[in-house]
Length: 304
Image (tube, rainbow, N blue to C red; front, side, top):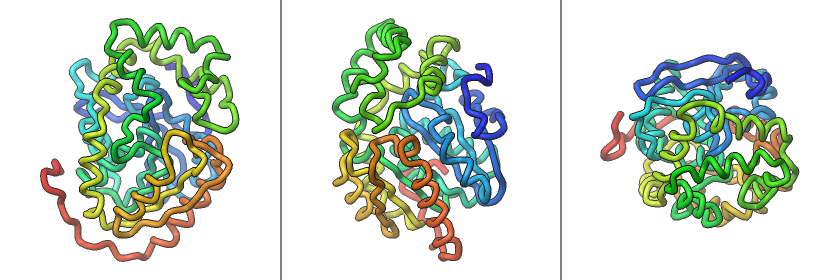
């Protein structure tokens, strides 16, 4: 995709060649690495307001995950179930030779971050979860009809074409309830255009969307107590999709977690409250910089 479909605030555009295909990512800053994971039907642009301040002290890396808004499709035979995408993320960290990563997840990216932390923890030093799928809420009930529609040939393309009509994007079943303040139309254009313009992206979206199931977040939840690195949960209590009680359950599930309430926002915390989120992440990294890390316990069945 042309550069117009990504935010320059994210830094330099790069590519990582993985067994599953080529993953495009953006990098800005230097220092300890922070890797940001987004959710369905958005891309690295979700983090465009968070990266600039953190990049003054840290190496900020934002991949475009194969979740329907990525600028380059993966191989046609790539497995895009949640565990497989978590494996892709682990492969991505390995390809960049990253160590001591602070992994940050929002929305679907938060569910994937939980799976990475419990199945591929070797390179992860800290975990940050903002409002995201967890436990039996994967996907949230309001978005489950989209999964059913994804099984109907051509239905996702019809939906994507309809969302080119800008007022429709504000509907609750689109982007309307994900933020308290409207997302810029140019950013929404960048989220929606790849599925219609880039061959293979709609195929990837269909595969990823139909594979989502709460069995994966439930399986991850059983293993969260084994993740003994520091965890920050920065959660918006006003979110209609990801309830506050799940934030509390996540805090209680991890051995070394703390919970911070982020007010005046909904699910897309990086969109509504980027300054507050960046402040919380930087403070969390400072507070845990010298905290000892216990010896790694490889989860049962882990691939790496």
